[in-house]
Length: 359
Image (cartoon, rainbow, N blue to C red; front, side, top):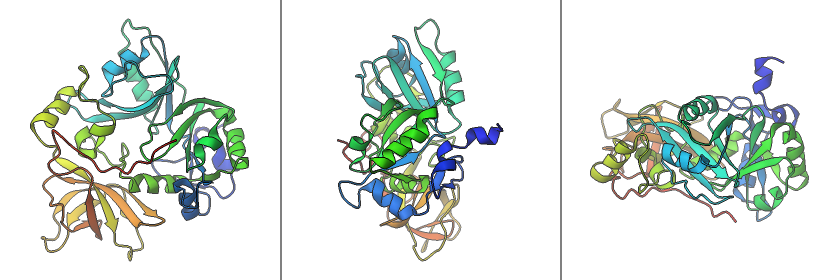
């Protein structure tokens, strides 16, 4: 088996109509022939019986065991994890010593193991960092990405359809935009997908999932962030950071910006000009539009997608000083901004996320 064959999901090979996604989601499906229909199913647009599943088996998965696992993770991340109840989920960050984002963790604990999934290609460096911080504590860190896969359910009927699914090892319900993440044994993935289809869920690709994520104003590490990003800039202070917990790497920056200052940049949501037949690419410049001087770069494009109701949309990271009513250009495409992280974010940052209640 070639290295390429090892990285391509089995579902990409067997599900009808599958078209492979591009960076950063190579190896899984972008869509299965009808992205708009796939979005509607994930979003529940057709009614309470809607559900879809998304192959995210390109994501990294860690399994952390040992009686000290939660207090240990608590000491290394931004989240309060001591006493996390069995079955509960959380988001957490690993920061650099200067407070910049390094890893975003979606995790849950089942009473004996903590299951963590992370962005594609980041499991190995995260596992190496965690292993270097074990010291004498009773924890074991295992990168199980080759043996486990993430299968994401969305839609109003998703919880019921996924109940009792064979091959599920763990479940992460961070609920940032209505998703339920199942950790599935990789060799059980084709059978799980087939059973979900028989129960009424449809396969949906990353294009559909990403469009709904962007519409929910939820950032993604490595797309809507760069090497300089701090948690305040993208709104993770509310969802992935606990401001009243003990010391962790990067906490000084988090506390200083929260209590004394403002982050230098802020995440914005963009409504893009629908008459243009292209989307801005990741990293494309954000410039001030008329009547401001042409060519004034104030940020960069993170994620962009076509939403089944909203049309072309994007997330971007711009300078804090950009007026909230300023017209913007994303790679030359006219864009109207909506505030996610306000310019005066700091001590009492309130971000604009559109969350769905998970039953």
